Amino acid sequence: MLRWTITFVIIAIIAGILGFGGIAGASAGIAKILFFVFLVLFIISLLRGSTKKV
Image 1 (cartoon, helix red, strand yellow):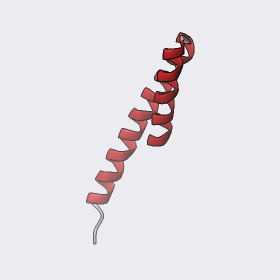
Image 2 (cartoon, one colour):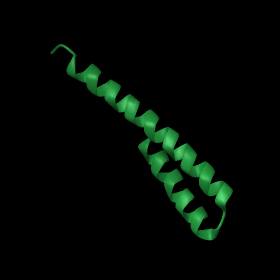
Image 3 (cartoon, rainbow, N blue to C red):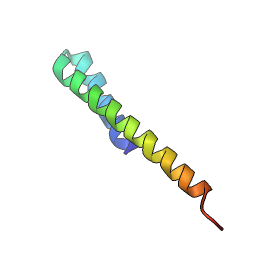
């Protein structure tokens, strides 16, 4: 999921440089959402891993 976030950030940067404002904004929005979903899932997996009995 982090790979998709990085991909959309790169698309947003390239689109912004080329002057495509709508595409850049949409890509940045998608990247932001994916990044926060990644963070939530990462924190959940850390908590579940630390409470797992060995």
